[in-house]
Amino acid sequence: MPKIPENKRFAGSWRAFSVESPAKINLLLKITGIRKDGYHNIASVFQMIDLCDTITFKPAKKGKVSVTCSDKSIPVKKNLAWLAAMKLYKDGLPGVAIHVEKNIPSGAGLGGGSSNAATVLCALNQIWRLGLGDAKLMEIGLELGADVPFFLFAPRAWVCGIGEKLTKLPPAEKFAALLVKPRIKVSTQKAYKDFDFSLTKPLKPYRIPRQIRGSGFTLSETVRLLQNDLEGTVLNMHPAIARLRRELQSLNGRGVMLTGSGSAMFVLFNGRKQANSALRAFSRKNKETWSKVVLPKNSMAHLKGVCGG
Image 1 (cartoon, one colour):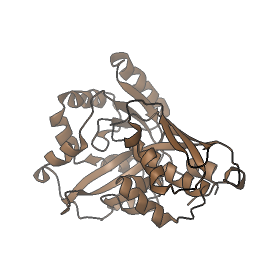
Image 2: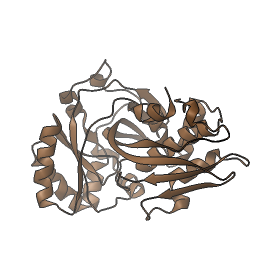
Image 3: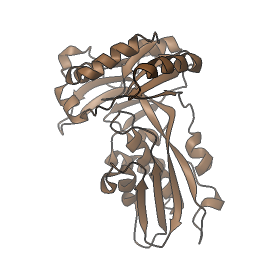
Image 4: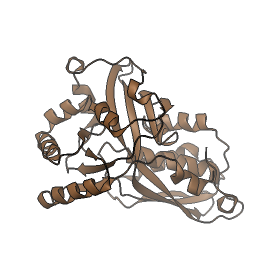
């Protein structure tokens, strides 16, 4: 796990610092079964992207830990950044003021809250010198949310189980994506509950698709990989998202897909130039819909730059 440089560690006093907390998209999402506890097992390819929240850590009075967020609609006590801090806090530890500047839309299937939790776990482990190893941090992360371990692990991964089985994947050929988020919020719980196994091709659990087992894979192979078992369910639940998908298909990208349970969708392009052109065309007709061009992140530099190497 990356470490905070000496000049930023708590040693009587420490300086404030900020960390980027990236979003992710799913390039594949298969539902492989239902566990006895009601959770669904998945097989998925997670890819970090360069859309990031910014989390700032500042020294505070001893024993005082606070979390604030630019998105006031997220209750503090339900904020995963706060819950992550409380998982690690013990009496007598130095105080920390944490502020989350949100750029990642919430309720979008982009993993913003899970990413925030992972960033807080990593940073506080070092600020408080808790000495927790990778495995323990990922164990704590899984208690906070199924996607949290990924954000502590790698920029691209094959993810199985409920999110606890992770395999690093090599970087793929560079691409750009137009990411859009309608104002609709999708209930993840309902999407999984309404999912019909008879409407999807079965996939053996934990078996990595052939085209991503090697040293890397091309954009064409990424496009062939695109499949989200929840997409049909979500489109049936929300006709407006189905209409949006049809509009995105008209932009002549390489592939269109819902990420996670939505409501965000993305269109893949060969590069930023084509994606920016599509963004301009889309925005002219959809001024009220959040949209942004994003690129894949192929390193953990967002943590290493602040937390050491």
